[in-house]
Structures are given as structure tokens and as C-alpha cells.
Image 1 (cartoon, rainbow, N blue to C red):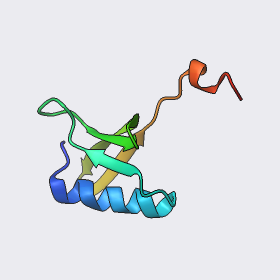
Image 2 (cartoon, rainbow, N blue to C red):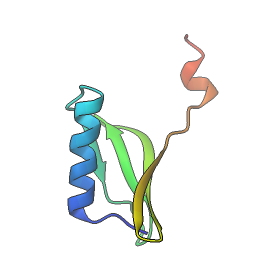
Image 3 (cartoon, rainbow, N blue to C red):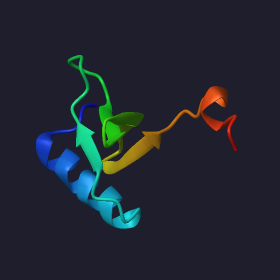
Image 4 (cartoon, one colour):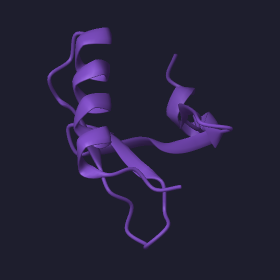
Length: 73
């Protein structure tokens, strides 16, 4: 399921408040049925999927962390 504009805006506000970061943004995916995309500034950080389980709506955030991104730590 794809997220509508209102859902993306609400999730964006939630993530900004949760992580105290106004640079978080949520955008529609590039393809028709693609998940929403999450960015911090210009950096892509993950995708959000919408799930409908018998009328119970939830949103799953998937963030992959590459080994090369954490080698400096």
C-alpha cells in the first residue's frame, strides 16, 4: 500500500519530533506503488511501508546500514 500526502506529512512530523531533527523529510517513492522515502537533509536513510492488517494500519520503517557507512566508528 502506498502512503498518501497526509500520512507522509504526519509521519514526517512524528519523526522530526521523535529524533529532534527538523531536517527529516518523507517523500513519495519514485514508482507508482513504491514505499515512501525518508531523508535526513539530502541523505536517503530508508523507506516506509504501509500495512493494513484487518483494518489495523501500521507503518514500517526499513533502514539499511552498509558496512562502509560504519567503518569509521
